[in-house]
Structure formats: structure tokens, C-alpha cells
Image (cartoon, rainbow, N blue to C red; front, side):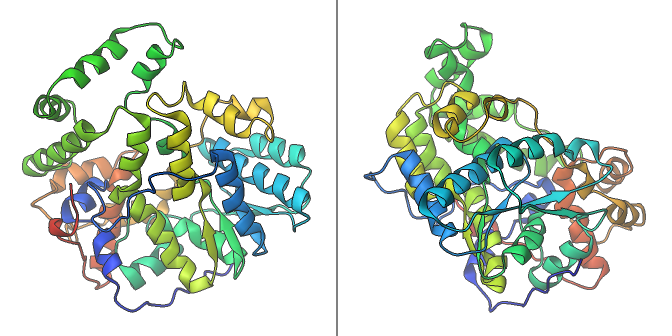
Length: 403
């Protein structure tokens, strides 16, 4: 399979805004709000269902309409809606494109994929098989690293084969449904809505919410994510940033959607794909993070939000997807991004490309030698590749982001 050629773009301040800081490179996490993000509209005159259909119809009117289809609930929902709209409006059917990884059991969604495609009566289905090409420092990743340097997420290049299939048509992607349809207070919400019996977890959430902002930050700091390869100073800085974000997340679902929409995390997730799509001439449509849909969703579900992920899926997609797909609880994982190329580079690493102010080299080296590698270190192995190949490891300063 040919590897798509990315053309360098002119300097763009957006790239600097979403480029990870040295701490974010070390932790594999983006923090804070996007200072340039426009807030969601105060209100829209459409339902969430209509908003989804409108954005997907836009993609169908620019054929070929390719749908990124993994077989998971969100991608299946996007494909099912696209088929329903195409048949109702007399438009060309969407083309599901699936990335497959033979021999990687955790990533195998074949049964679910076939169930959905059979239910939708689709004949045209593109399945692309990969061995080690999508490694964090493999051939597809190298194009991005050489042209743009480090970008987040570290596996952003997986969009390239999909964009290649779409060409000057459109790409529909069901990205980030997990973030849209859930919240940090889901257990408390379910208890209040009578779906879950009162328990210690929900009580803990309630007590946490009753504390002052400062007390919530102290609690969140104490329970923040720990990454063993970070230096003590870096761990402290990361814990503080995580605590600020966790304590700031609104309990109200409607307010949380607006808070999420302005996160730097979502901004980078959108922008990296749009950066690549500018090279291929592809229109990228991401219905689940579309501002109109998010606003309509906030209006419809109000403060308490959803009873759970399955109830949400049933409400939005119950008329187009089989019940078994809506109710599934399993989810694929993708350990193969840390493949042969990453392992060989890690084994030969001599310390280049990794900032000692943030990372304990000995601990990182030991972790990289394990059978299972923490994928939050992916930007670090890409930093090593850049340094090894004579490229500067660029990072944005903390002043370009807002917390």
C-alpha cells in the first residue's frame, strides 16, 4: 500500500497552540482550555437527532463519503445513520473503511463489524490490513514527524489511510463519544436518576462536590494519575494541572458539554485531522463533537444528563442499529502501535531527545523494556526518533495554553 505524501504547510500559529509542552510530551496528556476556542451557541433550534443527521447529510453530499468504521458503537452508529440518510435522500451510499491488524487479538472486531455491515446491507466495504506500518515511529508516523514535528495525539497519523481513501470526498468519524456521553460524576448521576443504588462511590462524589474549589483541588491532587518515569518535579506539576481540571469539571451535564467543547484536548483532536485533510482536499465531518450537536444535546438532557452509555445510544441510534450492538460492553484496544520499530529504537536509546528535567531516564528505559508499554510515553519515543534523525524536538511553552 502506498504511503501518502504530506506537503509542508506555511507556519501556522494554531500549530504552536496545540503543540504539546515539554511536560505534555513527557506525560502524553494535554492540559487546560484552548484560549482561542469559541464558546458553544447559547441555543439552537434543532434536536440532537436532527443535528447529527444534518452534519452527516453534508458529508454524503460530497462523495465518496468514507466512514471510519472500527466496529465499535460510535463508528457503527455513524455508519448506520449515514446509510439511513443516503437511502432516504437518494444519495450514494457511504463506504465503510476499516483498519485491520491480523494477529492482534485485542484489536479484532471482525464479528461486530460483520454484524453491522450485514444489518446495513452494504456491499462496498474497504478493509485495509496492516502489520507494523502504524507503529509510533513507523513509515506513516515518520511522515508526520518529519513534516510537522510532534503532534498530539501520538497516533494521529492513523487518519492518513482513511483520508487517502476519501480523497476529495468526505470522511465521517465518530471520534470521542466516550468523552461526550459520560462525565466524572456518572455514578452520582445514575444514583440520583434511580438507575444505581446509593453506594460509597456516589456518596464520595456528593461529598467532593460540596467542598470548596480549593478543597476539591487538594483531594484531586492526592488522587491524581502517577507516571513512574516522571521526575518528582514533573509529577508535582502534572498532578496540579490534573487537579485543577478535575475540580473545575461541572456537575451539570449541560455545563460540562460547554466546558469540554473549549478544552485544548478537543481542539487538538480536531485540528490535527484537519491539518492532514488540508493536504488531501477531504471534508472531515465529526458529528459527535459538532458544536450544533453538542449544544442541542446540552439543551435536551439538562443538568443530570444520561442514565448511562447504553441508554444514550438507544435514545440516539435505536432506530438504526441492532440492539446487540447498542448494548455491547466490550471495547477493542490497540497495543500494536508500540511495535517492532518502537522496541528497536527504545532498546538502542542513549538518552537523546528526552528532557531529564521531566523524565527519569533509568525508569523510562526499564518501562520500555517491558512486554507491555504504557502508551502515554508514545510522544517520548517519537522525540527520540526526531533527535536520532537530526530534527529538533519542538515544544510549545506553557504560556500558549490556558488552565
